[in-house]
Image 1 (cartoon, rainbow, N blue to C red):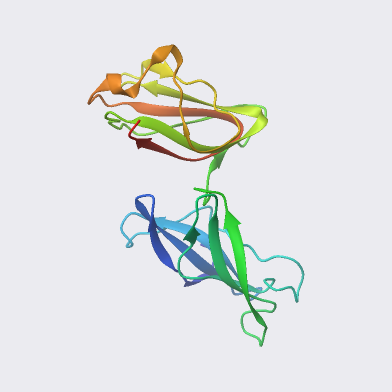
Image 2: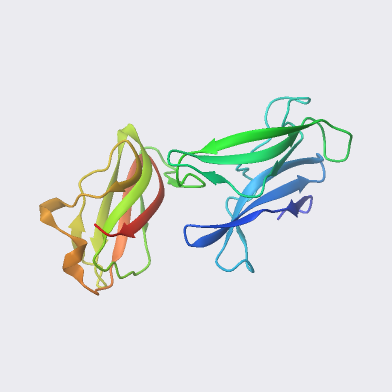
Length: 212
């Protein structure tokens, strides 16, 4: 962490099987504060997601309602079609008299962070660690551009391909993965597998294994 960037405050909440934190970062040189995303498996060891990149950034010009400081409120509000992040904004620097405002930022469902390709001309891939899917179906949350795609593949412990999905399109929240050739995860029993996501012109937010 840069010497002039200091953690200041952090609401914590449990979501998706892990703890998430909305940490306020105080830039001691500019005397401004923004909010970043952190996560932890146990509330003891924390990991910043893209350090230096705000989840809720300072906006506008000096004197605008959240130009100076952004402090997240306690817990997000989870609705069916969006996540609401209430926060306190201020129009001036941290260590001066300033006006405070009650503000709102919104995210798509599961939209705290996601993976997207760094080279637009080439598809990217992500592969999970070994998991046992059990008798469950696979669902994915992603935003796929009109010219983009997300394809899902399943590999066994020997890294042999077991199945591939139909391409996923559009904006999906827990979108059901449809497999080619009538494949079903039910066929695998207690076998360990790895799931690979290939994507281009798309952002992948999450996947889940749920009852079909």
